[in-house]
Length: 340
Image 1 (cartoon, rainbow, N blue to C red):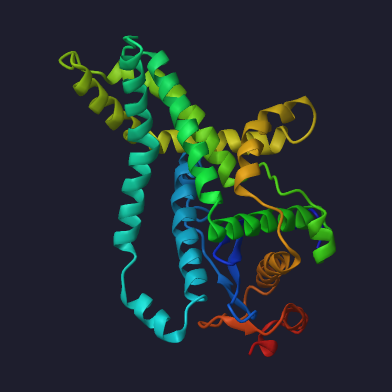
Image 2 (image 1 turned 60 degrees about the vertical axis):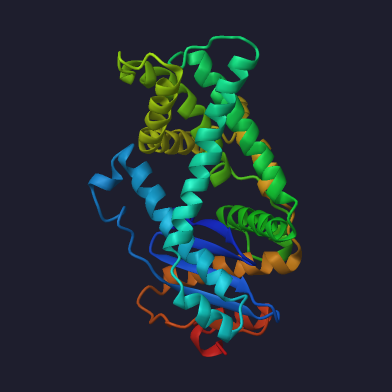
């Protein structure tokens, strides 16, 4: 496959596995508790790619983010199911994940939006500095607390053994994508030589979102603050609502900025613009072991196989391979016959 025809493939770490997304397909490879490799792969029709409006600059950022969140949640659910027994899987399948998604969303809004603003308000009162809620200084202070909370949150969850393994798979995903983009044979040895830090990482995107939200809030909040809102409480509530309303445009702008940085800032002096994101990736990625790299390679190879065999029938049930060697044999012989 030539470099010009090589499709773009992105990824995501999941529980004991890796998801890879190519333009026309999706694959998830997961290490089961007994050591076998479960692979789910198949064609995926992107609503963004097939919609001219959704491909417009700034619109595509929001559309891509929504689609990615939906696909990512599905991959996480699949990976979690592969760690369960058949009986546990049936019970899990009977419950709905909608409530959990709603709870997660509310917790995220509280932790990364309400808490930083509350901290900024408390700090200004503690030191007797009357920072107007609609001034840039207040938004800068809020952004500083948001970065602090984000950093402490990442450090905190990275101490959990289960999350640390997810971060190792995150590193394996980045390494495998680097090897793929460099045109190297996807062997464990080649992949392990690559970096765990990638300019298109979701962690970097979140860092960009924080900086953009500070700038956007500083400009937009004064314009939308009504004259009747003279009390600090009312002003803080309105500011929080404005921040929530700004999430789609902030995500759209951040998406475009990350696209530009990934394209033009990977070499030369502009690399300095990538360093803030890389610093946070130092937390969210870890050096993987060879077994974890095998899973990332399996996900990548499955995605590459599907891109080259788009018309092949996709199994509803995941394919299970007893070892990485048996998976590679399956790929070489059209993937299907070697499934167990």
